[in-house]
Length: 259
Length: 344
Image (cartoon, rainbow over all chains, first blue to last red; front, top):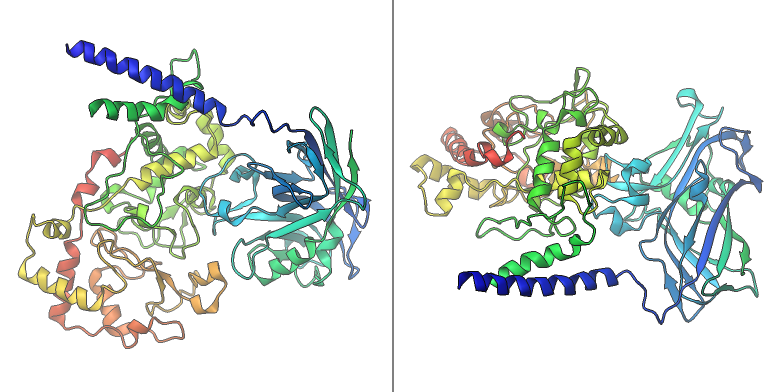
């Protein structure tokens, strides 16, 4: 009698397990009535329009201060394509773009089939992920973009050297972060496609958007940043915010390719 | 009814089954646990296990990591070197703890218990989630002094860890995220609620007359900041301790960048106070008597001094003595001897 009850129980559980198994495998598959295409987003880095080379030539900022670049990396998150009436947000949208890693300079989006006219994203990691504990993937603290003394991501990082720096080995370091309050460096950036141009996402086809980011933007407009005056900025605050106000304007879309 | 319960357990497991790693004899089939909160306590403002389901396997992995010196560069400094169970997971009898290469830490190691209620960690509240806290001591050059990538490599080279990560996490990967979540499961499970004070509250014991008088004084003079039952209100306050000119530690101001937070530090829980000496953020006061004498006599005025402490806290020697006797009733030897939290 007891055995029979147990068998009945297992039968029920077996059915439940199968049903759940089906439910679980379904959740990541898009509905069949929402076809998607592929859009390759690629980033190229320049300084005053010249391709950036790490550990390479000396560059000159608006104040005539020379510097070299050793590291240049930043987070792009919450990517949304739009066309005025419809928008498509990438799920789990976190990407670390690193000049030292060619593989990081382009990645694919899988938006719904449509024609889009705007691209928006956050430069940095949204505040929610800064307060949600241990993260993986692009947000893994192994990527050297996470503070351990005050919780939060470094949204953008530039390191190098400059004869104007009074720091050890003439080092310059800009670790820009801070996700809340008046000194948040988070920037939502919306880029319009070139006039008359649309991004056409079609099923089975690969489109592309090419974006240029010019580091020269970091030094001016609206805030004039002097290397001699600020060779190191590694804590959240007004100075980090001033640079972020500048770098929010570093991106331009250079090309849209529809195949 | 029993059937419903069993179904419930399988419900959790159902999703994991499809991704089991075949052919290695290690099956992800975790035992889910629920942290039993002490009766009558306020619910935590957030659940530290909401995105990190508590399992026996995750807890045991976290426990092993907590006691493993390999998380430090030279193998000698596990988390437990500064957080000793017999001291309620503080460092016993040390103003500052010892870090790697004969260095001192810069602050007094706090006891670790009831962290499920603690939204912000560290004396300055700089850490906003228990899962990311271990990154600070592991990588600090004067604490465990190790690189995260090195720690993960050491774990990957250990077949015991390979097995335990497979048991604790669905994809079995040895990643920083899984390591940190396992540590959070262990640390977040450490509760202190079995002191004599708790037994009195539950009607299982009685205070002595002196302890009762100490408690009455505590309710009148201390309870605003050291709020029951956790014995902290989680705020940051300047208690009139002068700046430590060696560490130049301004506390909360380093995190907020706000001058109004200068010399403010987190209000520590008084639970297990008798075990967690020395006291204050830099361990400058060695005994409970010295702490009370500070409140009686040496509270330093200043622009950010907590208004409640203007002029200090007057108390007679009898009140001081009774208060110490009451504070001694907050010692939880069930916690300090619980084999579940002991060295792995």
